[in-house]
Length: 352
Image (cartoon, rainbow, N blue to C red; front, side):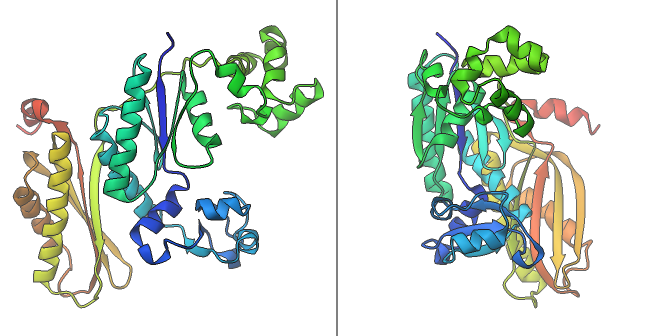
């Protein structure tokens, strides 16, 4: 029985984040990218925009011509990275170990049990929908390449699997360009020898592909044949957790800043508790009204997961910034040096 690999992603992640955080634009197509006046490119698009021909990489001007009713938004990587961390927190409540692939996407390996993979997939979809108001699509197959390709081929959110033994049938009619590592030049060389789809690439045989492309040809043949032994490099917990907030008014007094810090540290304590983690380092990020950013950080005296202790450390760092006399526009708190509960005694030795 082949292994079971799961690939889960929020399609058009940047657009999904914008939609989840701003319900007022939920009914409109969304295109996220650079400034159309400066030849900006599309970085992500909602399904409605994709259905009208909008694709990542095309110019924003062309995208808006194809989908004139779309809401165009500037890319905000800081928010998307934070949203991806929140996604990881949610996913770990369904399955503790996975490999982050890119923002909004992960791999997980689940031994050889397809029923367990289907259960985990549905649990992931439920928690992401409930906690983040986003929809997840999940591909399940015998390897990373197949699971990711299956998810990419899905037209709507849900769960699909390639049954063991059906790998070649799934791949056969797809264009050769869908194979990982087959770019325009490689695709052109394959076309020169009559290999346009994946079935035709596989039919060339291992020796011919090695002759054409060297060791890279062996990899192409394996993937075209439905074989992929690349392992999932799972991490049992994230490297860091963060929360941030944008303050509605520039004139914010110290009491209001303390209240905002309290809310952030309460949420972080909940994130830590949900994963059985403690933090050994805390960083504070303050964005002022003139867009200047000041960052302060400190190591904690001992691994910490309590909101009150996190707030005490964050407040101390805040007192070491110009906040108060100067206008503050945003606050962010990041926790790093994360350890599992059973690792705390070993971590304490580092600070003796």
